[in-house]
Length: 491
Image 1: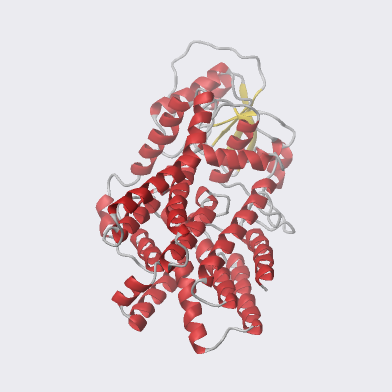
Image 2 (image 1 turned 30 degrees about the vertical axis):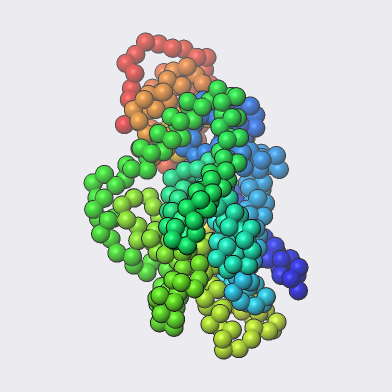
């Protein structure tokens, strides 16, 4: 039965990923900015371009590795990253079940793991799938398992594995999207503080060393690779510094609003979390919960970031912390098992209800932040656009002044230069460099959202060839001619 549970989790992972992610074959190709940027960055890296030098992004090298790997399966679709998502969800659920099995029965652990999907996909930043936070789910799920094993006292070896897993998770998050490393660091500090009076100082220091080793396992190879490509300085500039500026932009005028904002129930996952917490305190008492279960760490950490204190973009923490909510799933299952044993027929019934709910939730847009794209058997409004763009294969593209929408992925477009797109709140120098690309004739295709620079484009040999719902596509159809003029600034 144990092996069958893992087989069921694999099948369910494929089903739910197919259902909830726009990268799946269930949907027409419906571009979303972040996965599209990651995909083209991965493809550019596979073709030999140097990251952060020849193409820039505000995400880490490990994310580029993952998307680069996906392009070996398909370089004109999201088929590769879809398969990777299926595998990562399976690993996440498998560790969740192993965690649950410490506290509840074999059948109960399967139900708890399956229930976790409600928390994973009912989060704002999940959107259409393929995001940076989703790639970190397996790391967080493994960390919670090691946390539970460590505090259960069943195996002293897991005291080392716990801190090693914390380090590996922190390292992976740093090299994927370093801004979401903070919850892991806080969890590490909280555990060390909890252990401070329970174990000798020497062991606390050893634990910190194990965490450092875990982080080094992930970070050092990436740093060495960047150094070998001569991109270490650009990595610091484009990834570390640019991300830091971007992450603080939105809160400059209203940080106090976020500081004072309460923790409202904004989604189903929030509601279930609060029910589990209040019910648990009422049933066992606050002190009893604190001292008897390590999973309390995960609930408290999740609560901290549901509070959404001073960071404008910290809703992304909700997604990376979603695997921690196995604690709530275990609680509900344990309460059910107090009443009656979960036999096979009940497990099948509960599983069917969860899967039906997930299916209905996707169709009625209960999951993610945005409406899903059109299903493959329905007509897609994008079809005329892709038919036009398909005649322009293997072009260098510039997304002028804004994000890549992925329209060129089926046609195998690639970056024309370092700032082939601009992240939110770009600097003036980034905007100026984009305009310089046009003067030099670097892009074959320019995608923009206004006709403000139409005369400028024509001056440098670019003409409008397609308009689509506020998207304007220009292509270079004349020899490069560089007249002297006043350089325009992109407002």
